[in-house]
Length: 74
Figure 1 (cartoon, one colour):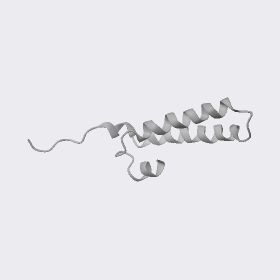
Figure 2 (tube, rainbow, N blue to C red):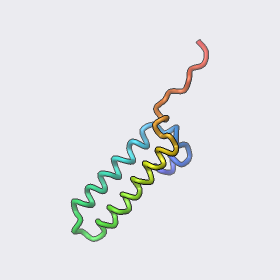
Figure 3 (cartoon, helix red, strand yellow):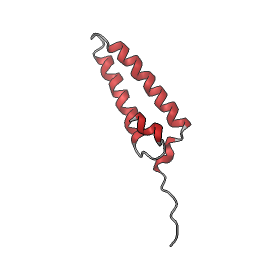
């Protein structure tokens, strides 16, 4: 999904909004099973991915993906 956003960040409607909750839920699940090996590392890595995705959303103005293009003609 990040590859699609890297190519055309403002043409993928809903992609930004799918990535952030998904990774947030992965963090919550990793914290829930924190006693398993690799869970803490998963929480840290996915936390960094959420931070990077939100930063990219702001820098790319991802909220503009929902705007409709202007209509031309009658």
